[in-house]
Amino acid sequence: MARAPKVPPAELPPEERYKKAKEICFDLLAARPRTQEELRQTLHRKGFDEETCETLLGKLDRAGLVNDEEFAQLWVKSRHANQGLSRTALVAELRRKGVDGEVAAQAAEEVDRESEEQMARELVRKRLGSLGNVDEQTALRRLLGFLARKGYPQGLAYTVIREELRAYGAESTLLDDAVID
Image (cartoon, rainbow, N blue to C red; front, side, top):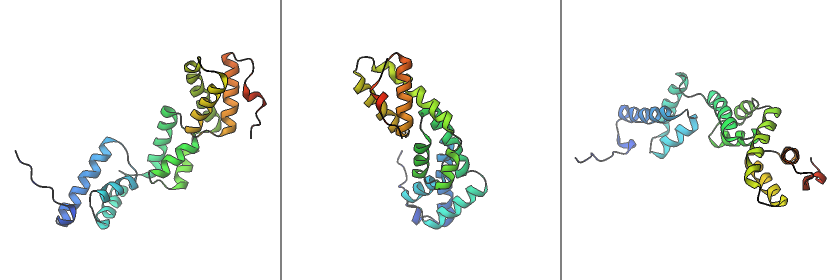
């Protein structure tokens, strides 16, 4: 059965264009929550005009279907718990998704210093088992790089790695003499 050719959104009557944009947004929102900017970018990429996008996004916002503050809070909880990301990394991810910087920073404040440190410890403990066959310098480099990619500050990473290596059985580490900021 032959499909009808796709008509570019700009060529559709305004009511049809709006309906098609709404379907796209609902499909995206059914998969997972989205930011307004994510929806806006998708609609622009698919050829929808600015007026259609802003009208639809305004209605979705007023209906409570798109809320960047709620999205940021859910994102922070999920990504910190499941990916082990630090506050810094979480804010950066939210900014890339189009969340306002203040909103992103406020959401990331839900991750306090203690839970951030605890998550870093858990990540290091999980990694230590796989580093049994490498020398200490290689293990340190890998662990520091791993935590850095997750957004952890260098001082926290040094402290956590040094303490976890001691708990793991190392009598001393190359980090014992490191100056930590």
